[in-house]
Amino acid sequence: MQMKNRIITTLTVATMLLAQAGTALADSTINVYLKGKLQTFEQSAIIKDGSTLVPMRAIFEALGATVKWDGKQQIIDATKGEKVIRLQIGWKGAWIGETKVALDAAPQIINGSTMVPLRFIGEALGEKVEWDSTSRSVLISTDKSQLPKADSGVYKGYATVMRDVIKSETSTGVKMPDATYKILESNSDAFFATNRDKFSLYDKAKQVSSANMSKNPAQYSSTITEVSRIRIFDVQDLTAKNGQITTMAYGESESGGLFFQIFYAGSKKLAKEDVIEMVGISAGKSQISVINRQGNQYDAPVTVFVAGNIFTALEEYQLQAERGKGETIEFDDEAQARLDKGTVTSYTGEMGLVQAAEDGVLSEVQRLVGTNHVDANALPQNRTPLMAAALKGNDEIVTYLLSQGADPNLGYSFTSPLSSAAYSGKASTVKLLLQAGAVPNDFALSTARDNGYADILTLLEAATK
Image (cartoon, rainbow, N blue to C red; front, side, top):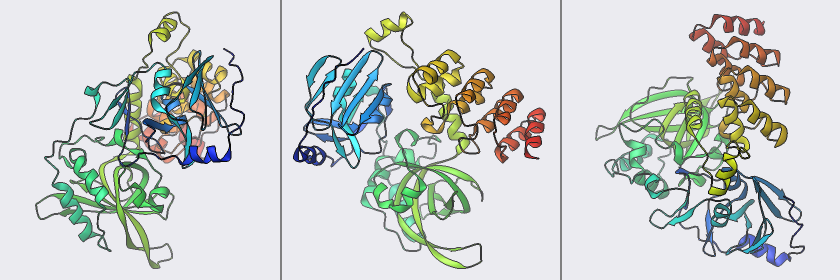
């Protein structure tokens, strides 16, 4: 469908400034759930003029729409199937196809993020949108029964114990921020329960780089975060007065130079040189003494982090693969009718491409890459289409993706396409990747060796010579 060129040609400087700096209610966290899953955004959701605003690209892509941004005109165009939506910064209106509608709040730019009205976007794309005042949550096609269960309160007192442990075990006597303490109290089951799930906090976490976390830990004192690629260099168990065991570990970012002092309720079996992912919350900043390669000792800043979950990167990758396989996309009645006629597919966007590659649907991979121009090197949730296809040993899709410019070395060593292929146990897939320039890594070699894949090990060892 061709949309007529309808835009607001001029916006005064004053209007633009008001649009970007409008008063927003942000005194309490607003959660957004889509089909039962908590969404995380780089810029938190806010309430403006009674409407919840969320980051543009994140919400459109989560809903399976493609989005284009015209920075000069500050126009947003989103497309899903035959439906086209147009918005503009500072304008309390929108176009849905050829129909003009009014908005309660105009899109605006906050902290560099383009924010759009969530209810309008969701309903325009066929989703049911509700507000749950009890949990301060926006529910998109989500039943209240799907919301997380309330914390039992059984482990609430552990937050106090953890606060005391941190104060006594950090060199500067770190005082836990009140915001951090409140998060630990309200999520005590997920942080402290002895039988908590390995990924109890995973769906609540916002991914943050070790660099950003180290730069300003206070910024994340009220946000559950996931920090990746931390290499452990010291670990010990502590016993509190009430008998509670806490694992205290020191780690450094794998890129080097960023240090973390990690506290975990319970005894976590960690060893030096383990590389971990951790989900939890920042509790402040302290100092540690470290010795550099020249043997000189110096004091370095260290981020204090309370981890509710600690796991290997491979465990996270496998969890994502398992969850992705079971996901389905729901459609409204109109879309479902087109689906039944074979004119609509459930594979959309970057995540859809990864899913299609994993499911072995070559026609959908070709459509998304060749027709819809989805990047063959897309990396949603740290997974590329090539990793997904290699993990399944699907030579046909691996060959196609490589022909479309997929990078055989994109990813960490433990989740690279070559490591994934080695894990699949299929030598022909490994060979295809090596021929395309994949570089053997220790993880791929150890995977082949540990699983007894002699033919794969031979290929990898030959490529290292």
